[in-house]
Length: 128
Image (cartoon, rainbow, N blue to C red; front, side, top):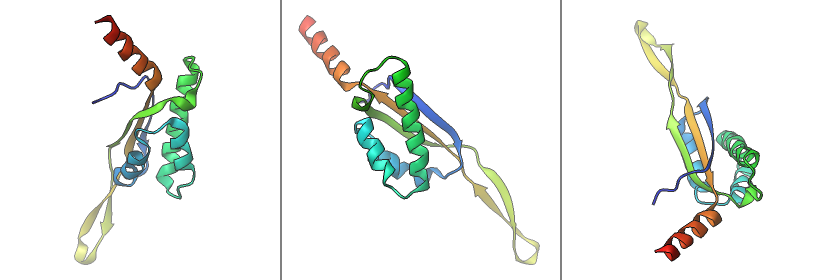
């Protein structure tokens, strides 16, 4: 069951590998926005700071559009996609060179109001 996010925010070209960010995104997916912020706040990871900023931005976008209880929104979409890589060369023995890939990530977070969504589903079933 895929939910459509009403309020979104993204951080593109974040200077961190996607492999380091995805486990943190899995922890907050499906939780209320306030709970997700509390979870991220006490994590020592550098990626948690980046996700925290994106989540705050998504909450601010929702508040800008007139949502009252921003903390009651649910994180329905928390994605980490791979971005472009900076490619560097590391000199090695006997004149060879190894390629170093400095990876980037695109972090996307979407919030939705489940109360309004379930109320709309109940109204739709009553009409039938």
